[in-house]
Length: 215
Image (cartoon, rainbow, N blue to C red; front, side, top):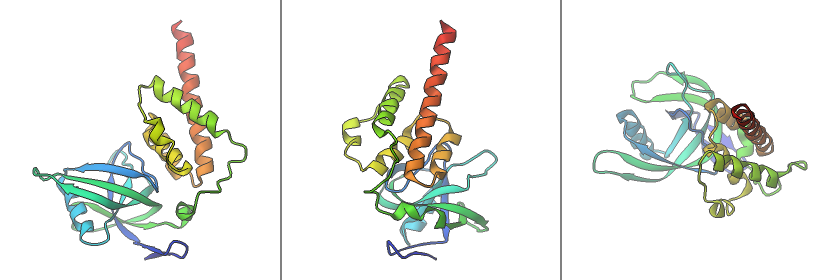
């Protein structure tokens, strides 16, 4: 077991994983899921009987997964008449995969380590962005989302804590899977903000070049 002396939580070294392409998931955020494949229905049923903990991770081609994902706890669930399960995962801490475990279950299990992401458990009231212009970043993202037809309730968004705001933007941004994964693997929220800004600036520059070419 992995024991955190700060938050007094115990996290399992062996966890079941739900691989999903194009989805990244951060601590202190919520992820609603519609579970219908039998192997993942089994997974949810199994964890509901124990600690309600499961990992989310991005999948690659050829049944491979990335090395970094996020552990979540089922905070709400509902079973539908057609056998589907509607659940909500609340993010706890990111993990790094060590190895896959052979089992006879329909879903996959892995040994993981949380040490690299201990900051996920820390308070985020005194973040130091070293003069990084967060209002400018949010302005760029609003423009970027609008150009891509992505709607976000900014009034509700502004009620979130700063770390939740950055993580939410990283989760929903219309960027590549590899870029999403890069954001997930960035250890600190400060560095994540800078990388997100660079990604948005890249797309803005690319769009401006396309417009020049078309004209």
